[in-house]
Length: 275
Image (cartoon, rainbow, N blue to C red; front, side, top):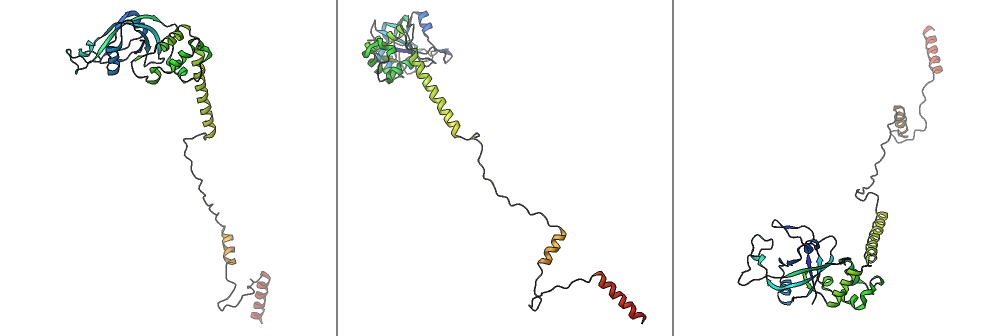
């Protein structure tokens, strides 16, 4: 039965040791023990189910472009993972015992790279498609349906997982024939376009400065201009009562004597004095 096994191609230091293992490292090494697995389900697969000659999809995980990059093969069946007893190892486990080991591993041999590594984006695109895209019609309807059922799609976090033979063959075809770039690119462009349209819509409906606080305009009464002294006197005169203390209406106001009247009075006074 085929399998999919994950490794991290980018540097990640754990307890002072870099645990990265890329396809370049794998190809250079040739054969590698699959140590450091501390998941009981994955451990059980390596201990009980993996057999000599089983094929493996070597998968780059936890990186910018995850996907299947090479084909490998099981060359040694499950045996105790001795790194669990090494206190200096990044995945040391103080609870496991040499006479009753908890963790197991297998040896895996590098076979060949895939010229067009099927990415996780491609596999998810296939899994969510309602019909077989023309660009990858060569995998057939069975291959299309098998990829939809892969654990990689439904249980992506498991580091060691089984793969149906039809799905394995379809992935290998995708990796050798390619021709699916437009599928992934069009999906990425669609996401970018949708995001751009959303931003433009929001910019049209929101105020220019959304962070600015909206304040109410206060209505401040205008202070009246001061009246001139002349206007004040005029206003006071206008405000005098038009009735006397007895309540009778005052119809006429006394007029001030003119200069001619005053001069006439003076002359009359002087004539009387000389008479």
